[in-house]
Amino acid sequence: MYIFDRHCQCIYYHDWHRGHTAKAAFDQHNDPLASHHSGGGSTTTTTTMADPRQGMNMSLEEEGKLVYGVVYSLRNLVKKLGKSHDGFIAYKTSHYKLHYYETLTGLKFVLNSDPGVESLQSALRQIYTQIYVELVVKNPLASTNLSSGMPVNPETMGAEGFRNGVDRFVRSLTMFDTL
Image (cartoon, rainbow, N blue to C red; front, side, top):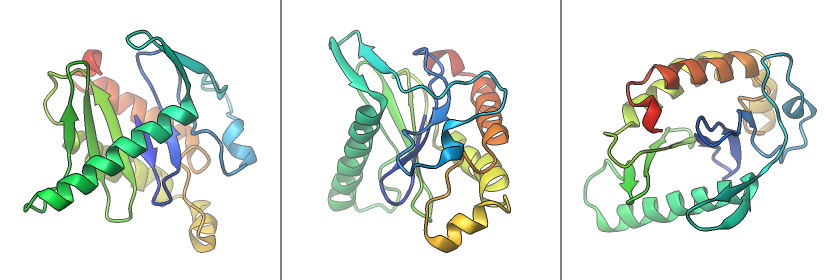
């Protein structure tokens, strides 16, 4: 799962099936809190992943940029071609399905799953409204970032609660094994 802010920065990444753990998304804002976690057993090392289908190595930062580029392009294409106001919510290939939810504030939630999984847009909306808003936005420490125009990073603002809440919620989904 990826969360992108309105400035196109990946502010959160979590993968349940490729061996990566939840981490501060690439720590591009040089936030010292983003690279230090207390307990929880998660790591923040930047690793290189190998895609066995394509035989190429790609850093998590490069992957995040690629995912954002795909989402941005498809969203704009759907807006130009479509007449409905629903817009882009998912796309499917023979290997995976990308689920997308965008908030009114410009946050973009992206989750990849097995191609046979039904739409997860409502699940992404729940992650935003019940976990992100409650544990990140309503966090009093986040107000300093909001007033300075800096994006609110869930890894530093309520990190443990947010990370654990997302993990519990996604694992509770009936299609978890296919994500």
